[in-house]
Length: 350
Image 1 (cartoon, rainbow, N blue to C red):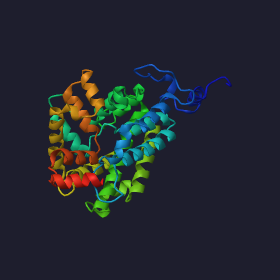
Image 2: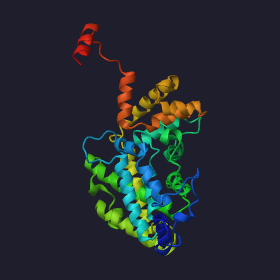
Image 3: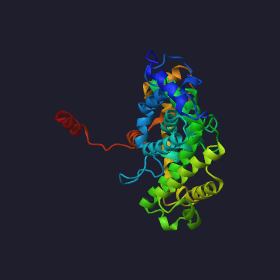
Image 4: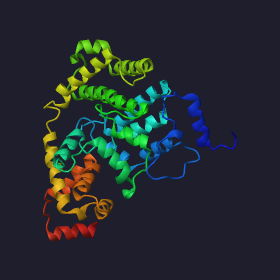
């Protein structure tokens, strides 16, 4: 035992502690490019750290969750949503004795492919790319970690983490129990946080939520989260499938449908989203005609044979909301003319 590396000891402990249904780090399907193992961290711990330190993860702090440019510090961003998903998922994974490290890595990476302005930006890019494979944020997330990060080298993550990122949408099926936990935790997190943000925005009132659903799930965000997390743990223990029990699941998805009707398609809440299409389309056309204006790392992708349309899409998808608005102003909106003499005076005094 004394001759084993710390990582190897952790891998042994996984077999002692975790359920037989867990994804064990020493049984991972591996990475696309073989590399020397870390002495201390398991492969899934290493993936988690790579995602956490990636540029794509940092950009999430300025990407829309549900409301565009909300005024106030307390609305969710894509990053805070991601952290809430990770917290819920880790709680469930630990209770079920599944691999918490793999679960956390998938959770932190699940939304790396989101475009600026949330699903409005995703829809805009999907329209632009309709004849070239479309655009879906889960697929883009895999492209981010396989190709776009680290100047085209990617993060070289394990197959299990990439599978979880790709298949976190509700209609898809991840290969691991840990991936299935993240898929459900994502829905649990955004339904509850979007209600909270909508109440804060004055779009909803807690008392307006359907009473039969609230009586079953709880009349506050904390109570609903408690109900859903407990239910998914107990039901998974009983059935072996990561899912909510039938009655709770029906109530939860009815609540989700309610949000689609009164929040996600609410004209008052989404009145600015039509502008997103115009903004992103203009930027896409500009960079397609002027590819040299993109960052060097994206020009390199074109030089290496990547399709220019896809690379321009990548470039825009990577942008944060703030960056899109600022670069649009810089490129598309005329600047005030101050005169040559005034300009020289400003330069002299700068």
